[in-house]
Image 1 (cartoon, rainbow, N blue to C red):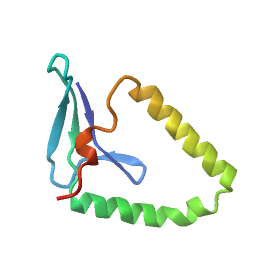
Image 2: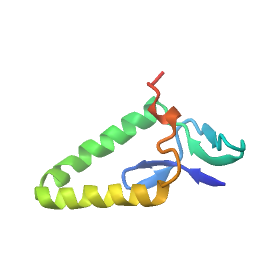
Image 3: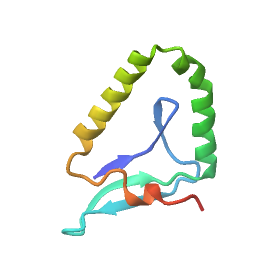
Image 4: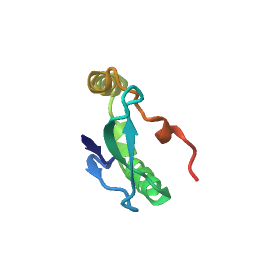
Length: 95
């Protein structure tokens, strides 16, 4: 079974709460993966990291930014093909 952290500031980290949730295959009920459950504190840390990085990102020429984003999209498709990504729970509003 795969375990996924939160990707922040260029690295995989555990959530501040340590809470996790699992996703299951609806066809057979088997657990597919465990994910860290992000909390408000984690969102704030991610936003702060993005704000620190933005000036560097802004200075990349637009074609280079496009190249990076297309590569990220390609990797996402490569590693999630056939799976439901992101899990629906990640799309739910913050509580």
